[in-house]
Length: 256
Image (tube, rainbow, N blue to C red):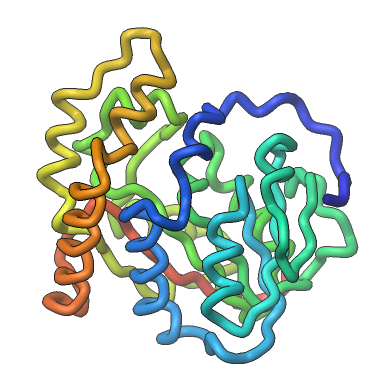
């Protein structure tokens, strides 16, 4: 890990990282959704230089390096999580992107931003800093939780400021040097679970319990069942009309 920034402690609940693993149905399904979505906009087979911003424990980097031809660097401001990024081809940085280190200007062919944007109060400034790191005509892939009407105590505990729909994502890029290439909802099959989570998972001061109840399937059988449902959905709907998550591709279209 290369330390480039001095940052204040991150208050993101560390218990989340213990649950976020390659066997969890949702993280497997998110990568399945990405593998279906990304080839519309970028080759998966070329040796492209990619950065994951907000890489956490390195799960997405591991999934990508096991699947595509890219070399995936990662950065985050959570030092404890970054120490879990092991055995990867790309470099790992403790780095605050708002510092806009010159070594990263217009550097990356693509940037991955999975389930980060919903945590950011000032999304415009954050997205401007992201685009600094992306090559002109490079692609930014975003995944966010969808449908703000289902925002719950779980969302609050893990720091979600908002959940998105397509219109909100379009608005986020309206005044930025980038264009929205396309969207895709996924995890429509999880909408009943999302509604149930809003009703059943309550924040009573026990953050660990809320994270576990809101994210962790109670047993391996249900984990497999959820994954099977999402796998079936993938083949039934090429472009679901709605879903628990939203994936978006953005292209940086001019120099800043």
